[in-house]
Amino acid sequence: MTAKDPRPSHVPHRTWWKAPLIVSVPGVPLLALEYGMVLAHAGMEQYGGMLHTALALFAVAWALPHRRSMRTPRVLAACAALAITVFPVGILALLAVAFSA
Image (cartoon, rainbow, N blue to C red; front, side, top):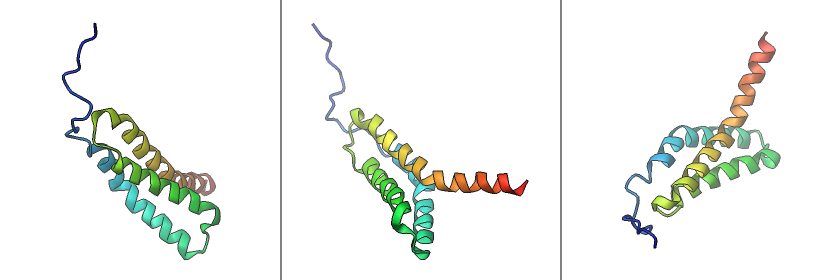
């Protein structure tokens, strides 16, 4: 005999929007800045895939169903999008520190 879960899986999660919002506030403006810089220099060949992947992951984080069972995939998609967005800026910062010494 199994115990029934008091919260059915189809009931919307009240705070589903927190993870995508926390990650999107710094991530989307940075992604737009990177997109504008890359597009201005006509360099979308190899770098464009990363930008489009990050944008798609941001969209997935917001578009997943608002159920409690989708919390982990939503957080993973949002964090992966932020990591992909911050990676090039982080590499540039590390290179700037390395070559300034």
